[in-house]
Amino acid sequence: MSQGFDPNALRDKYSRERQRRLRDDGIDQYVEVAGRFARFAHDPWANPGFTRKPLFDEVDVAIVGAGFGGLLTGARLRELGVASIRLIDKAADVGGTWYWNRYPGIACDVESYVYMPLLEELDYVPPEKYAKGPEIFAHCQHIARHYDLYSDACLQTEVTEIRWDPSVSRWVITTHRGDAIRARFVSLANGYLQKPKLPGIAGIDQFSGRTFHTSRWDYDYTGADLTRLADQRVGIIGTGATAIQCVPRLAEAAGHLYVFQRTPSTVDVRGNQPTDPRWAAELEPGWQQRRMENFQILTAGGHSDEDLVDDAWTSLTKTLPIVSGDGPVDQSARAELADFAKMEQIRGRIDALVTDPGTAEALKPWYGYFCKRPCFHDEYLQAFNRDNVTLVDTRGRGVEQVTSSGAVVNGVEYALEALIFATGFEVGTDYCRRTGFEVIGRDGVSLTEKWADGVRTFHGLHVSGFPNCFIESIAQSGFTVNFPYLIDTQARHVAWVIAEALRREVAALEVTAEAEQGWVDAVVARSDVIAGRRETCTPGYYNREGHASARLRQDSFFFGSPTEYSDILAAWRESGTLEGFTLTR
Ligand code: NDP
Image (tube, rainbow, N blue to C red; front, top):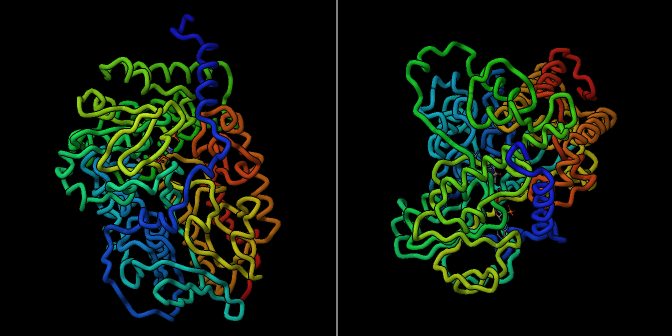
């Protein structure tokens, strides 16, 4: 007990809390946003009257998805001189995550100088250490303008199918606007958390008040400044990274706010600050890549004598690695104690900031620190000190029922005029269900069939049977907490392979089944590093709601030392041999 806590008591407590939250139905507890729930994915930002003539033309590269993935791939292609590029996105603008998510309080909790890509290329230094959502969205638009990616883009365009036509070695992309666009190469940059999900709570479609998902904020109802909520009883379901950011704003605006909690998040110090103009003026060329790599090393299990970002992420991961650079996550007694100590500090912060002892107790998380996405905020916990805010703790069970007039927990109905779902995005469902379209490869085999038993790629990008196709996703790609770092690693690689194939006049380039198998084997073997955590952690989207499976190992990251994934891709490009590919001229 010298450290101020009893490890055995904490182990027991964590185990009991996990048990309480565990459900047999795993990821099937969520309902798909489709059919009668399709309105939850309706685009509130698009022009509903938009029309255009269908396209039947050809481009060199079609990129599906105009978020950071599509934008960075387009940018890197432009830098290599590729002219014929078309971005396709169902949204009415570029931006992806930052197009859809416009909830009040939206910001990014990874430092802006490492999160926002292409800062040097665009000669831009963000005004604050942590950027707000509108600034990041504007930055996406700036990238599109700078690299001329708006011209020829097809926005408000939903892809319905992508099919390889072997007779002409082209992909044919069909869309809901009647297009049949041919492309030599396709890059699928559909994002990672792109499809909103809803909890399968009994009566969820019975609610007669206003209801929407945080990624489709209903400003018509709330008002741009939320003032229309002043006399409203508002409920929000979910306490993940999204809710942490919007609860303080809702708390200020709503007549009464009910926060329905299933599992509390860890909420650590934020400490945003304005950018020091003297620091910005002294930045030397190459500064952003160096800073991104330094952050990557420190947050992905490596060591560096310097800590350029020096924030809650890096101070944490220096003492408590998420993954160890040498392989297995360190499950040693020392690491476990460090984790307990960190969580005690997180729980202590709640006691220090939340005045009502019962509310403070209910806000305390009881699990290993990296079992869930860590959160950072300086106003979230304090919001529960307001008289107009009630924490409704469901003690791991979730909201029992939704009625026409409210939500029920422990048999008590909370009357509401509005119910907001901060319930996150699909993880673990089939790739094509999440993207909304099927990809049909060389032999008429669909990607869903190909991946029926788990993701299969080479380098986390190429799939045997799917020539000239790149799938940019986190599955089988290098681990990071700073996704634009991974996205840019992949974008540079995809752009290089395409430019090289065009230069060498290769008609079709396809990874061999052997190369693919080798990568899949490596991913499965390396995913041992987090096997223990998957078994013992509180359920959530990191561990398939507590039902870890063989498939989860295969669909996981390509774990390794912090920059190993990008180093492997760079070395492969360097060799210039296109090893592992079959080329057709
Ligand atoms: P999450 O999936 O993280 O959270 C969903 C929330 O809904 C959880 O609190 C979950 O509880 C709760 N929930 C689900 N079903 C029920 C139910 N039946 N009853 C009550 N509660 C329920 O989604 P978010 O949108 O918050 O975040 C998604 C991801 O987006 C984050 O993990 C992060 O990666 C990213 N993000 C990043 C930000 C940044 O600043 N970089 C900001 C916002 C999001 P439970 O925990 O028990 O499952």
